[in-house]
Length: 94
Image (cartoon, rainbow, N blue to C red; front, side, top):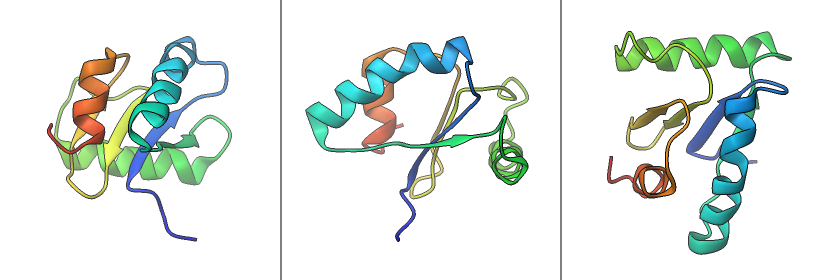
């Protein structure tokens, strides 16, 4: 199985992550792009992976969830964002 290059690091029952799910569904419907969710609250290995990506971007303000990372471009988003921003990130514009 190939790893998706669009990752969303989440936490079980995180209200900010839950708020983003309708936008993820819209993105997939509109563009065909899917974002792979990785649960950092249940899986320590996913938490460590998220920490590595967060450290690599060097943004001290970006240390929580949801955290979005594009492994193809290195682009990232922190926290809740609007649909326009999410789409630009997923398409590699930001």
